[in-house]
Amino acid sequence: MSLPPQLAELVDDFSAVGPKDRLQMLLELSRELPDLPERFADRAESMEQVHECQSPLFLAVEVGDGGERPVHLFFSAPPEAPTTRGFASIMYTGLDGEPAATVLDVPDDFYTDLGLGEAVSPLRLRGIAAMLARIKNQVRAATG
Amino acid sequence: MAGTTLAAMALPNDTDPKLAEYAHPERLVTTGWLAEHLGDEGLAVVESDEDVLLYETGHIPGAVKVDWHTELNDPVTRDYVDGARFAEIMGERGITRDTTIVVYGDKNNWWAAYALWVFSLFGHADVRLLDGGRAKWADEGREMTTDAPKIDAVDYPVVERDDSKIRAFKDDVVAHLGSPMVDVRSPQEYSGEKLHMPDYPQEGAVRGGHIPGAASVPWARAAADDATFKSRAELEAIYQDEQGLKPSDDVVAYCRIGERSSHTWFVLTHLLGFDTVRNYDGSWTEWGNAVRVPIVQGSERGSA
Image (cartoon, rainbow over all chains, first blue to last red):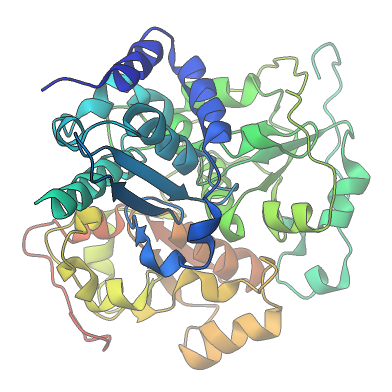
């Protein structure tokens, strides 16, 4: 079990700073979350809602056919939910484009190493755990 | 402000006619009133949101942030911070004991009402809600900024929290069985159905249902579409006419962890003028895990 390089780098960046700066990093990540591509615009119902997030978050996972079955992630969350957007952005930055097997190998509790519990509260972190679990479920379904 | 020795006078009340109908109109201000008084000596504006980062994306100019998860809760014991920590939280935000505080937030002021309730546990005299909260201010196109406010820290006295009047503990609720109670969660949480949904262990309780005898009034029924509170007549129609509660009743309100029910506590206490309303902050995460407390499932109130 190991983290893909981009995710490992994020974990390192977060753990290198104090709680206040972690919150600032999460805010910056929330701004970097890519917009949903046009092709999802009229089929929002095909996306999966992550109910564990405090604010509405929709998620779509596509697994490529070729070689290592690269995983692509798509998220939709409103601007008034920056924390949820930040969590989604961690997933996107850390996992998008990675092989299916690598995504499935990410430890379910990897987020504890981000050190966000103190900055955000453990309760709010449920959202990120649920996001990873749902991504893995969809990857399993697509590759199984 | 630091450097001044005279205690600031409380700010005038908002004389808006809609607010004037409520039992305690001095507990609310309109967005227009706040815009007019921003920057006044003796006023502090506090934002408290569900989303811990929302304030950082833009806030009312001069507003400070208080986050209940990370600031108002004790980090170890399931309780609120003590008087010493509360004094630090207020003082470092430039708030004195005489400051008029206006709290606002996201989601119909859900968390703002919670912050107001906690401030009330410490007996802060003049604390008000912004009617309509963050959404109304933003929707009206009023100014928002990401600039951090310039605050001079002041001394806030160490005041002991008074848990005896507006807060109920589990033993209080056991003793209260048979008296009026309001469950402000969703109908699915009230009936107990919600805990049985697959894949959603989010309630953190091992039993579903409600406390026997509790009326079901989801908290957001008190909010209008623009996130302001419904008019007094509309609120009376819900809580008094429909649910049969009386202003002289001794009422306990609860939800999952006590946040949504502080919104209802605000409505009953300050808008409808109920004399005795306590918020049971242990709420379902305590009751639904407690051994041998009575529980009713389904949509009927049931009795103890």
